[in-house]
Length: 220
Image 1: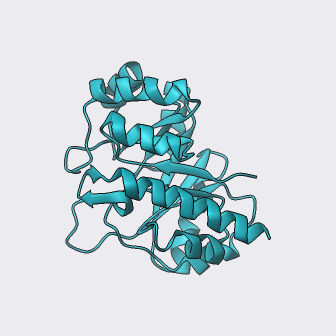
Image 2: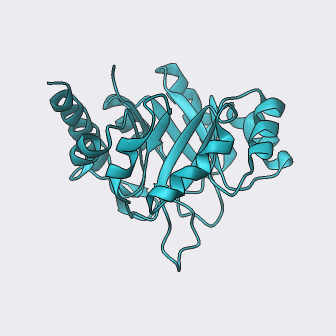
């Protein structure tokens, strides 16, 4: 089974093409104005078309967005999945899923084993989980901070838990992250940038190559 890989926070055709050329099958667009990776819906719309033409899934990433904001994003961008990266409750996740008719990935911040307990109320509601590191105390961003957590915590999860591993991944450590966590899906953003919000096509290519090589080694 091939890895699912999402390159997130994309804003340009060059970055989308680099992700698709390297084998990414999810393309993430961030709609959060505090983030250096924030993208306008009209730009994401055109990039989403590019992704869908090559059978990748456009993912719209929001943080505690209201219905009006989500409705505008869904109508304009036509994403294949919504990622909720705020403090959305199980009820809110269920409501978003029902209103917009799209699969929902709910993000969780992880530092210690007990943090994984937070996913339990979302079983059967969220279609997928995303595990990111807890942000630094001074960060205004819930994700994209370039910090990681102890990947071995995920090895204890039930194998049926459908999740993406995120947080501090980069071309240099992704193979280790796969080996330690046993993850089947990855999400990367800051680890393939030359500056906050500026994607580096060479690092995107290197990340995808390293991830795929690491997965091959794990199967041997």
